[in-house]
Amino acid sequence: MAMTNVLDLMTKKDRDAMMARYKRRMEKRDNGEDNRISSEIYIVAEFGYYFGWLGIAAIRNNEITIEEVFGLLEGARKVWYSKLVDQARAQQVSTASVLAKSPNTAFKRGIKPFVKRSEVT
Image (tube, rainbow, N blue to C red; front, side, top):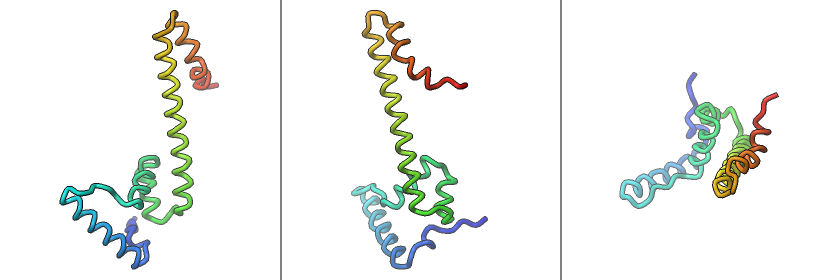
């Protein structure tokens, strides 16, 4: 199955503007001035981070709308941030346990909500 080039999905005007931006960035990068990427590439790369190569391929093949991309990215970010919060809370429990008079008891009490949520019934 041949993949559609993302440039083929753009209007000539948009493609020319993007190629001009690309050339300017590459010139700056080659001179060591700038290593930023375009917002278009960032969005696709972030989508790929969360949804893998098949996510990127779906964008490239026009199998997913930009609205779906942004909606799924919002959801993926919320899941990621939720995981970060859980990790921070668990770290806080660990740190507080070390400083407690009874570390083992404090740890078991603090980690209990995480253990409860992880149970499979």
